[in-house]
Length: 406
Picture 1 (spheres, rainbow, N blue to C red):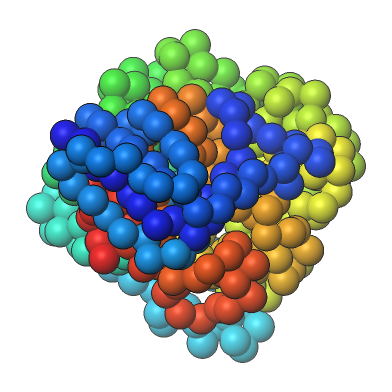
Picture 2: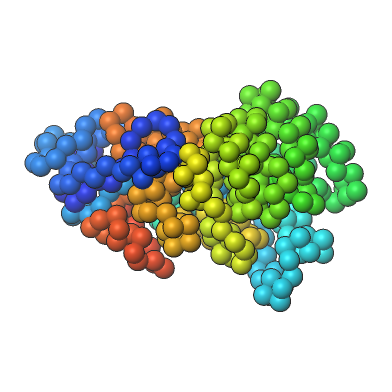
């Protein structure tokens, strides 16, 4: 089926099939008075001026801005319950690690997720994805990590697989049982690491593309993380790591050392970690909404860009440290708090985000041969998208060449 998108005021896109860093992160091409022809879900032609005839479906962009569909490269998508009760604790100055020690935090969500049925988790997550789609997210990474047992982790990953087949947002699965030490392994972290490496990874490897570890004080140290991630790599999974969110304990350095596809959070990242990521070709996935929600500092994104580290920006949607699913808000904060330009942020939520989940050759740019995933914005130019905030600026969402949300 052919689809023509006409009357595009401006196409804004980075180009290429690999993550961009340094000055190239802001190298965005603007094509005015444009049209795009799609067939069988892919872009077949792009031009300016009068649009060609003969397409079965026609979408009128009405002179608005068009970009590639947004890619959310870090979410904890599937979980039971919510944790609104922790807000008051945070406002009274209780630190997140103290909330964990009191049985809240991740372990609270583990309890709700284990208790929920697969159908309940599926329907809840379907509603969340519908809202994400309306906000412009066309591809989304989804981590497990709220099960912390073989069966509960498999349950989360099965939900992701089912939803990837039955709704419009494209999903990429990450296994993250190394998110916390479950109650049954309290005081025996090494035993739980053994469980992940010896029993969990062989069971889940066909349901996930990546493995992630929460490398942080009071959770998993750099040595634990290396053992788990290298075991995952040997099984064919890509490596990701939650690094330097609270304390710099070697996570970002490890990411570069083992060639992790991404290191994520990085609020407390040191210069040595930045150098290691640059050398290892690791994408830095920065999460400004988490910094905002927790009242913490912001990752040194400008230093990373200038050092040659590709920077992506993601929502980090989860029930505890940032229950926000709007990638648009994270984009705004990328400008306001990281001091990134609109062009750099656009790259961070399209091509670099796609690279962080192994999809840079398929999505993330508006180029012939790429997947026909687009956002038509209720804005005439890219600057308007970042200038305004606090409401949904998406006009139309197109996935595989078909209008999904309008």
